[in-house]
Length: 268
Ligand code: ZN
Image (tube, rainbow, N blue to C red):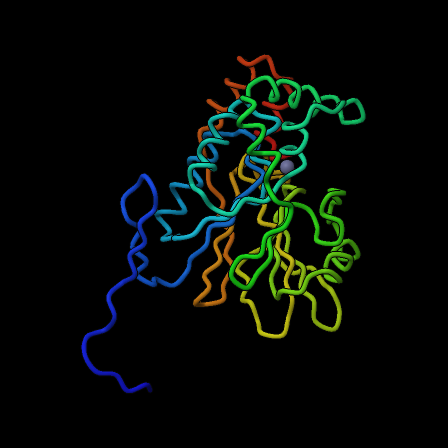
């Protein structure tokens, strides 16, 4: 134990422009990892309230803030105001560009054309400037995969995960994109392990899909996100019911494709 005299050092106070000073009391990081919000305001608010209740003191967004559902501007402003690391998703890219969406699936394209009209040029610029990959603390964050982040590859089996691992130089990488919570573990081989509580062991690598806040596709309609408790090296997944009926009504009232409202109830 280190010898010390006198009182413990005072917490560091950092003044941030335009708001009250932020006091870093060196609470161990509990990080909320959330993404694939897809303009679902009710799900986003539910997830953020839960994360704060769970004692999360850092937030990281996996991208796809917009697309599919009816509240792109409101969700974007909430995430932007959090001033947390955010990586770019394919819907963020498509909603902030002006390229043709013809090659996309027609429902997603219709929603993206609508989304482009809901966002200001300034909001679109914020989306366009998001980075593809971020390193935070000792882990990495990407929307799809680290091997070709701009190709938006989907990881649905351990062979897809292997391609990612060849480019993963941190022990943990969090991602999203498929809207299905999944955990791949790499030791001498790569295997999928249950997306439940995961203890991060030294010497192993983990590629963790944190699921989707606003459009889960694993058959469970409830909003999904993950918490990384750094002190205990523990990742847990959270599932939360939210006001689905309101989200569905907004989709229909906006004139978006009806199937976008129906699929939310199915978790597909
Ligand atoms: Zn998505």
